[in-house]
View 1 (tube, rainbow, N blue to C red):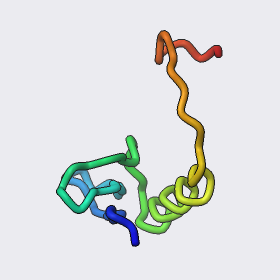
View 2 (view 1 turned 90 degrees about the horizontal axis):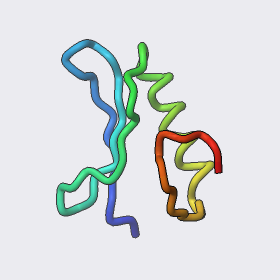
View 3 (view 1 turned 90 degrees about the vertical axis):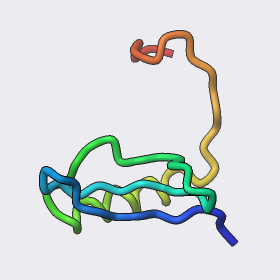
Length: 68
């Protein structure tokens, strides 16, 4: 059983967003961008769920540098 829930909501600017919230209330992850429609937002959320269930963790020197 998961200890987190995905939430989908419309922000003040009318953009749709998602966030992953732990049972303790902490936000674990969020969409980082607004979507024009709820459908597109949910597609982005599903992409994260499908593409990152076993993602590796790595340390980077400069998170703004696109190279490895």
